Image (cartoon, rainbow, N blue to C red):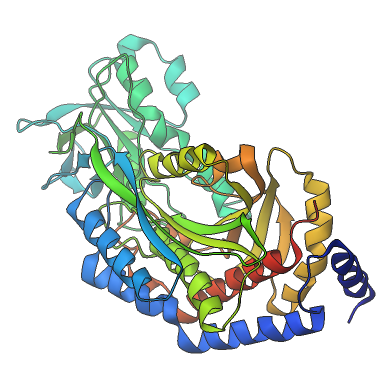
Length: 464
């Protein structure tokens, strides 16, 4: 045992947190990994979710099937409580036969691979046809006179910055053209918008995602082009004017529909009022199977409670698993959970989110809640996180997740699992996000890391 761990053990014992020694904790974590890697339970569940149910857009029939399956499955696992939390969610449907055809004197007519963006309206049966205006940023579009945009189709063609080591940073640096670009284009008079897919590779698969709605102006049909076709369109524009012909049949309904968060918990034995939450979002976009985003995170989270229960572990604090609904196009599940939690005056010692795919785990990011010192929590947790060093897991500042973010005013720490993100945006929001692109052992390693973290937090707290 290192001197640091020895000192930590003594400190924790004085605080009254520990029930087992750090040596025993190390053996317990080793057993967590052995059992989780051997059984691959999360992958078994993910197979059922993706292959028997499929994608799960909020408000869809598939999402309700998934909710029913999740509750029924959790009911068989011996948890103390399993329940559904009602959430009103937006209702958007893609429709069928989306088409984008590029027309130019240089090449004639050429069909492009595209997907409508979430919440985008359809074109109607007659479609739209207009000349293309290419821009690389929102600022470039703002700088154009309205007359240069009016009646045109705006093409946002800024790729993710592959020179950044973090693919999530690259995604964040390019996502504004998808979320805000169509609305800005509409304000300047455009009748349609296409964007380069947010992907880390050149291929023929378009990637969808949410675009913002405007309260002041009608939204315009908006689609994502595959990276190959975005490059092709840009190169063709250099040779002369190009028109696009677009047909989409998507629809955003005004009425919200009833859906649910799925919640399970194991009650704490000595500190039941302190909650350790682990969760992911259960909805997905309506293409692919939502395997990495975020079926993997939900199966990770369910395995945490399952694994500790199966190993006979009796938690000190209450352990809670939450499948949040509507992260992709509204975050209403996360907000509904937080509102209910605040009304009950609940305290989350830690809220942990897994929403970065089922790849090999590398670290946990940590952020402080409203009444917690990040330095104190980092210092305290860095001690027991040494028990995860043999599994190549680190602790880094900055973490959390979209669904647990609303809990910050009444939470100790917010944390996020950080797997290797090299390939995440190859699959994200596309038809490639399927079970076949999830490796069983990588998924199991993430579940083992999360289970070990929850165990350590339950044993040793956050140092407050």
